[in-house]
Length: 175
Image (cartoon, rainbow, N blue to C red; front, side, top):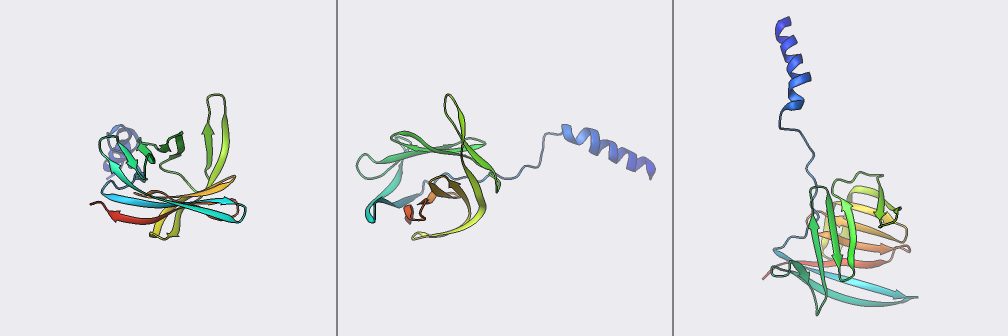
């Protein structure tokens, strides 16, 4: 019996770390579902006056972008560790795929690295006009809060006053 315990201990301590399998938490994907269309409402505030703009996005295979009205579009991609989304002006957001509550968010520029926010929750439930989304990542930045839903990307953004400035209002099957 002592012999088996000794062999088992040896295997667990010295051989198992060399084996090719390792338990790793599944990383959330924030990439939009390409079989669907997404309608977002954008709200711009000028004092108490709000201007609303709505755009519906569908994935375009040829360009690899999500196209909306006119020349409106956004792009996104994921690596093993990072989700990135952008539009006309370049990268709009980049987050790690396995964020933890309390983790600080930094933005890198060519000359500096600076703090831009923190993860408030990785299990937030967020209601939008498109529905209720669970297991959302909630990031609080200096002037906004962003909510990312798995398989749907950014679903809601609020400003420093708590006003909604972007919201997912409809998800439909692509025709």
